[in-house]
Structure formats: C-alpha cells, structure tokens
Length: 246
Image 1 (cartoon, rainbow, N blue to C red):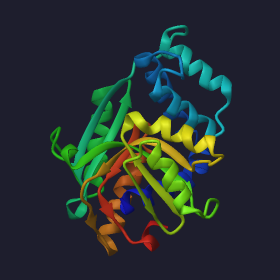
Image 2 (tube, helix red, strand yellow; image 1 turned 90 degrees about the vertical axis):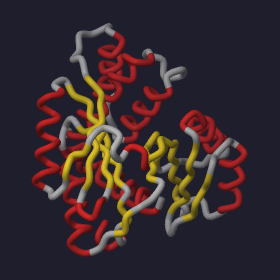
Image 3 (cartoon, one colour; image 1 turned 120 degrees about the horizontal axis):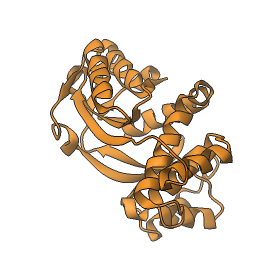
C-alpha cells in the first residue's frame, strides 16, 4: 500500500500544474463523457460519473465544462467516440505497470504508448500479464493532521463498510470494496470529515522495492505515461524511498 499511496500523494500535489497545462482537464472531460455514456447522466445513480465530477470540481473545472461533457456522453451534444482499454507491461526491476487508455484512435495510442515503454527502458506485455497482480478497490485518503483522532476515523469507516485502514505519517488510508466507496464518503461527510482524495483505483497485492538509478528510471516511465493525453491512469507496484518520490 505504501508505494501506491505515496505516488498518489505526489500526483495530487502535481494536479495544479497539470490543470494549468490543460492536460488534467482533457482527461477529466473524457472520463466524464464516457462515464455518462455508459451509465447515464445522473450523478446520483452513476457512481463512476459522480467520482469523475467530484475530481473535476476539486480541480476547479468550470461547471459549464462538466455539463457539456455530460451532454456529449448522453448524446445531447455531438461528441467524439472514445474506446477504453488497458496496456500492461514492465519497467526496470520487473515493476508491473498498467496504463488505462481512453482514446479516439486505438492504433495511434497503442503505438505511442509502446514507444514510451521502449524509450524508458520498459516493455509492453500481453493482456493479463500483470493485471492479476492488482485488485480494483475504493481508496480514500484523509489528512491526519486535520483529524488527529485515529480511533474516531477508524470507527466511522469500519462501521460504514471499509475493508482496511492504515495510518501513515501524514494520512489515513482507507481501502474499500468499490461498491462501498460512496457510503464511506457519505459517512465521513456526515461527521464533517473531508477527504483529500476518494477514487476507484488498482492496488497491487505485492510490491517491488527499488532504489537509485532503477527507481529513477521507473519513475521516469510512469511520469511519461501519465503525461500522455490518452492515458487516464497509471498503476504500478513499485515501492520507492520518499526522498526519490519527492
């Protein structure tokens, strides 16, 4: 968990910079559009859409952009047709990597992602090669400094159905079944507890410890993948020292 959560924290700190570049907004609009297309435009009944809209609001996306993306998804406005698929592979040291792709041109995206793996000393593997090492889970992060009563937090999330909670240096990390994520968020909100992040993610069952040059190379690969417009999320099972992640 620690490797996953530390990288998630770094990504959230980078969100402001990504938003300025427009990169984050582009990805969020695609996610909202596809979520609306697949599950309808009602955020009450469509959990994927609600999660995407929450992320967009946290990133200060204008409401007009959110509304247009939903309308494109449900067909009220003309929009691009996106295809979803994963590309799996390995980085230096045998680190397992999954890149979630959302694109209007699968052949182009596949070629470009393969090129990134190759340039960054990784290699693409067949479908299912590393997917079995990850589990889809709900993940919630809470600021420990803002809410120092660990027992209270644990009681709330476990009563609401959380599977596990770990306490790190500056955060509580809550892992849930995907179907329970919203219930736990609501339970926290009912107790006036704000979350730093709440999302559906892929958590590795085992991690690979890396240091030095190998760690830098893997981080370079993951960052390059995340910067690609067609990559929505990247999951990896590395465990890297804090000083390198910073």
